[in-house]
Length: 208
Image (cartoon, rainbow, N blue to C red; front, side, top):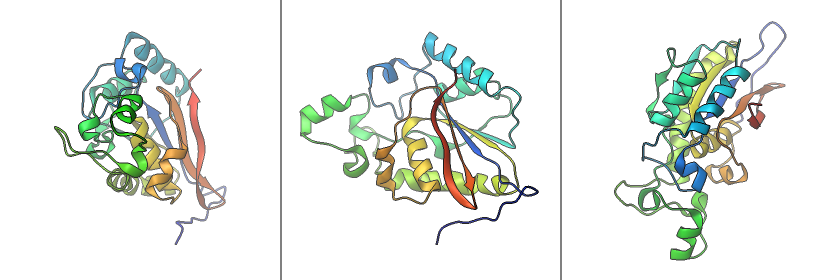
């Protein structure tokens, strides 16, 4: 059954604001970056500061951040590092044997491939399916939903694929539906409610 709430001017739900981390060397080249802990590039730091300007004046009841350095640094640069709490379930997709590879490299090796439907083989790490990633996303949504329902905004700082999984989980689509979304570095997205229904209120919006 869909998760429906009743909102009114006196009891308006809040939003979940999603900020993808700034550019890294691998996001620039299109390499799958799950467990590898890369820093932001100089441009990535500039991107993150621009997000901070866009979010200036907003307050959040919770700020949850991926355990990866690139997300934590982004949280610092947008001005919410001191409030941030590390949330392991916001870590990026575990790409297993495909860690560090680009999609063209994977396709050249195995033929047609879709991360969301085909998953990844194990490598140094076990790898995950889209269902695995959505289960983690649902844990995060359970953690923040109560605050949103009483009108508070929540900020999450993490990665492209976990956020795509989280967004489709919010609107109660299957895990494979994440493939219909795209998400650039240092963008702002928002999940919320309209007429009591969960919605993707904003997606992949640049900070400037």
